Image (cartoon, rainbow, N blue to C red):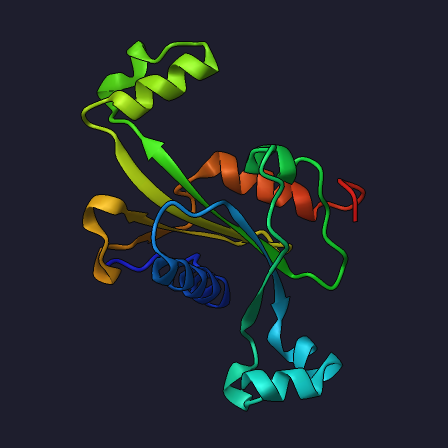
Amino acid sequence: MDYELDVDPALATAVLEIEQHHAGAGWDQPARLYALVDTAQLAAQEPMLAAQLGLDAPAERGSLTPIEQDQLPAEQSLEEVLSQIGWPDGVTGCAAVVERLVLPPSADGHIPEDPTAAEEFAREHPDREEVRIVAGVTRHGASYCALRLRSHDEDMAVMGGVDLVPNLLSLLRGTLEEGEGDE
C-alpha cells in the first residue's frame, strides 16, 4: 500500500471511521454531514460525555471525533446545503458522506447537458459504478477522501487519498471559511 506523505493521520482516521459506520448501514442512504472536533478539546469541555464514549484516554489525544449532524433536507442536494452553512470556531473540520453514480471517462462526450437527462443517462449507462464517498477537510487545510465501490463492497477495497473528489472538498472547505454561510 502506498502512503501519501501529506496525509493528516487524524483526519484520515476520522474519515475511515465514518466510512466504516456507513458501510454497516448498507447502501442507498441519504447524504450525511459531520462536524469534526478535536478529541482533547471535547474531553476538556465535556468530561462526562468523553468518559462515556471512551474518548478520555491518553491515546485519543490528537484525534478527531466525528459528530453526526441532523439529517439534511430531502429537497436540497448536499452541494446546495454546503453552500449555505458555516461552522463555529470550535469545529476543527467537517466531513460529508454521499452516494453517487460514476461513469467511465469514455462517457464524457455523451452526457446530456440537461441535468434530468444527464441523471437518467448515468442511471442507464451499462458501465456506471455506484460509489460511496466520504470526504473530510480541516481548518488547517488537510483533506482526505475514502471511496467504496458498490461492486467491490469490501473493507479492503476502500480507496483513500487526499484529493479524490476535488469539487466536494472545495465545497467543504467553503463551510469552514470565516464569514461564510450561516452558523
